[in-house]
Length: 255
Image (cartoon, rainbow, N blue to C red):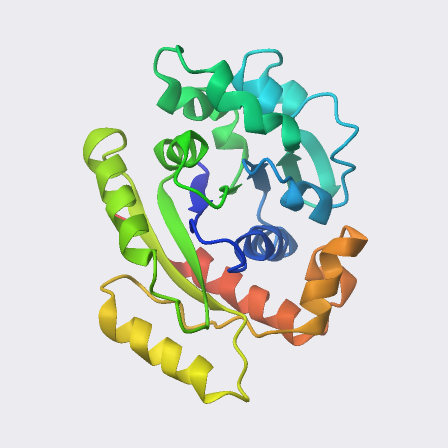
């Protein structure tokens, strides 16, 4: 049965989409069968994996409002072992469309239940807000992975996110766990990055991954070419970091 990981942080610009794209691709490179679900109306994970988000017939939006089924929404083998349910700006309307829907917190969970066993990992890229889409991701997920940028306000909002995870666990998905925290955009030349890492480790009880994702030009460039970093620049520091993170994620065990 596939392990479902929601990648969430209500702060924008923390490397959430970069992590969704490149962790998924690194897992796929290691022979794992992976499904990425883009639940962000900006659709950056979709375009970062090479799809034209403006010209898609079936996306997560059509799936959630019942206009297509799960198999029609999956775009297979965008890269080896890597499938995606894409997103685009239409998804911004889904909360209004589903305002009166029964069990609306579980729409995504129900939708993917029939394909979950086809994958080793399902990675959900959440929008940068604690919205109904994020709640749907968390009711579907086994765990939540939180990317944190190595900057002064790193801890800001993390408490709120952990509170949301605990609420969802208490009320909607009793199996939900914190996967852990991964540091992104680390600049070894600055004392600030080192201080942030130490500060966060002191203040949170969650698992902190050993792998730290560096600030890397190639990593920033790759999405504009519609490729994950392990395809775009396989020997770069960014590609190596996401391979190490994938190893850690694979090794992590939840009872």
